[in-house]
Amino acid sequence: MRVVLCGSTEETGQYAAQIIADRIVEGPCTLGLATGSSPLPVYRELIRRHRQSGLSFAQCVAFTLDEYVGLDPQDSRSYRATIRSDFVDHVDLAPEALHSPRAQDGDATALSTAAAQYERCIADAGGIDVQLLGIGGNGHIGFNEPSSSLASRTRIKALTRETRDANARFFEDDETVPSLCLTQGLGTILDSAHAVLLAQGESKAAAVRASVEGPVSAACPASALQLHPRATFILDPAAASALENLDYYQHVQALNDELGLRPLGRPLHSVRSLCESSVSD
Ligand code: F6R
Image 1 (spheres, rainbow, N blue to C red):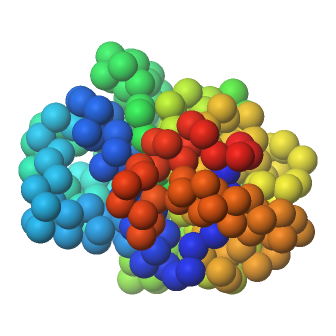
Image 2: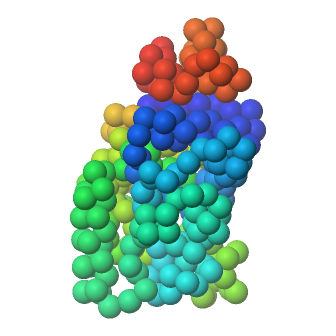
């Protein structure tokens, strides 16, 4: 597990964008895309690189993490529409290369079938190469709320009151926030080749600490990433502020800087070299 301490929100986006750009250079790439505020700096940076340096997503396939049940995919509040307006519509990713769970039909059988189809579709694409993640204040990733099985696959989940309150800003009022979703499972996320979690702001600090330094527990779903062979937490100062071993992560980062393994501001070295040869995982 790598903890990357960034100086600002924008820097978290630059760091994650570099991970994606490095992977794209290697060849066809399957991206896992999160919605919400946390990945917005990444999308801004990827769009900037697409426009200014020609970073191309033409060989990419993308899968959203989750989707509300009962919203039409054209509904601007659906996660499919959101990921299009935040990112996909501004780059050259083919519209048919964007996949999201079919969750508009609230019937339980249809939703279970859609969840199983989504898992097959991810497998048929060869699995996810880089999975972007945000984290909820209660430690959820995707919409895997506390008590989610660490082995779970894409399925129907009920959102907690806390998550519905946090997302009420996108709806008219709390009561119109959907209460159900389809979400990739923790097992699905653990199968990605590289899980990249971004957290910014003090409201995420306790969840970040529980995920990185607490026990692996269904009570904090993001702690499952401790089982991931390649998980990177990219944090701004406020999100990192509750970490008990902050001194150690700073020390590791300083060593990596000394070795020339830190990518930002050091164009000769890529994130790939950082991930493969930094002094601590
Ligand atoms: C979004 C998702 C959620 C969010 C999390 C944080 O697709 O799956 O896990 O990443 O709720 O949301 P923000 O980033 O808005 O704070």
